[in-house]
Length: 190
Image (cartoon, rainbow, N blue to C red; front, side, top):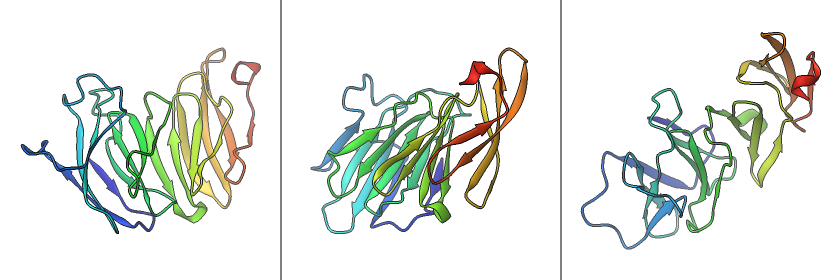
């Protein structure tokens, strides 16, 4: 279970080994429409800086140990990111009924970039950056199946995406300000 506090935060949180027998007065489930949420859910007791604590239950996406699970601080100090088996949610700790479910199912990796004030989500085909005001940008398709980040240098992210037609990885560069990509790739990835 990952706990990453790369960004300053206005909340404290504790990952629980199991759901409490007596639920606190404030309890929220993410996403709201999850079925069988208790099975493998990530249970987190969140202590906002100026509000009563609440229990946050994050439904398990996939029971694959290779997918991320845990808590990440976000560029906005009141926000927290929880991931359970590749299902990612951004929750406002002061108003926990307010949240955003990251649409990619699954998110394959979460990478904080505090020097750029971004929380980066890696999917099968593209990257999504979350900033202090929400989604900052999303890249176009970088891969037919599998994005690999190799380094962040200055304001550029470098990596590789697999091309279906040539059966090889092709390099790409992403501008961390805009999400614009340059890539030496065939038309299959555009």
